[in-house]
Length: 485
Ligand code: ADP
Ligand code: GLC
Image (cartoon, rainbow, N blue to C red):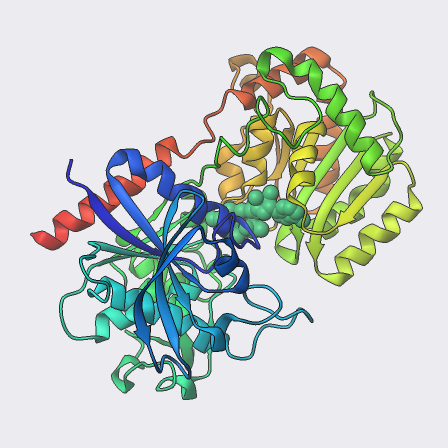
């Protein structure tokens, strides 16, 4: 097979900068594609943490006046990944996260910050870097979305454009008066271009103007074509349904491997599952939970946001603790939810333990120590924590939406008998249904042989990138063939 060069454009990438699953995907997919003959280079914004984490860096281009200041395009590497970095201090060198300042408020110039990223990506796609001519530009989420627009409205040859939607809830919608400032021509402002409900839509532009749209699970691909879940874009997505597909995320099974994980107290595999007890004890100690090895321990690793349905879990907590269960929660995000869980931890000492932070080691310790991992999301494009849970023998308890529906097989008498069951699903996403899922989980937990089966079935699931990387490789190859024809 001929090698395919792909330029990915992403606003975060693990391990350099991460707020969520997008970073995991951007960080792991290139490695999975490499053995398939796809060479991915990823363009990232030069945030301070990105620049500090580079292992090699070489200036490829000086851009003296790029969106209001001088910038450099670096060719770089880190963590085994080939990168381009847009080093533009006036856009990215500031305290805070990738999108918001230390006060938690989005930066006022995000339109310009990410138009610049997409502009740089489009230019690389057109040959800005000597001897590098990717056949495909692959944009991730709204932050990279304008690449499709630049490549459409620029003159000259354009590479194939693939756009992946990781979360339709974030669309990048900005005032139309910014059009010229963002480097877009007036003719781009039409319903068939970047115009979106009277504004400029970054993700809309990508969805309308790319050659292939992907999202991160088959069920989410179907959901976003409905008015209920399409968040204003379902009409457009239905119109392009022949270009849309859902490809499940995987996880990096080297980083997430209970047999080798240096971050957990005791390592184990399917043959040595009993060793998990030491991790449970360590986690209980760390979170101030009662040292009771028989108490069913539920875990959560999550952004605290409406999407994740954790307010339903708060409402279900009295029932959960009344059943003698425990909860270990790691999360950060909305102050309101933090307050709720803080109060719960105070109300149920020894039974509810919370850490409000972003803490990678603790995420591993929760996966390696809890009995069940909860993901009660209202919507979930794919979800990665349930995949980690499957791999770690933590039984996932999930809402039947999006990628959660695609990756967890509900324990029913039939699926248990056939050996397929890997977790517990519930629907609709309501407190009473979550409560009955908790009750069902507790019944399963109290039948040790069944529980062990569930754990082992989950651990036998392939949650790696192997299969999905093949689907991306085929998508790229098909697109190249189509464009050559
Ligand atoms: P989303 O991208 O919507 O936040 P995903 O499940 O796709 O949801 O990805 C979340 C990723 O972030 C996972 O790798 C998870 O382990 C990690 N994560 C979420 N919250 C935290 C946290 N507070 N500390 C450490 N890791 C976290
Ligand atoms: C988004 C989604 C999540 C998905 C991740 C990576 O953040 O919320 O479901 O797993 O992107 O694709």
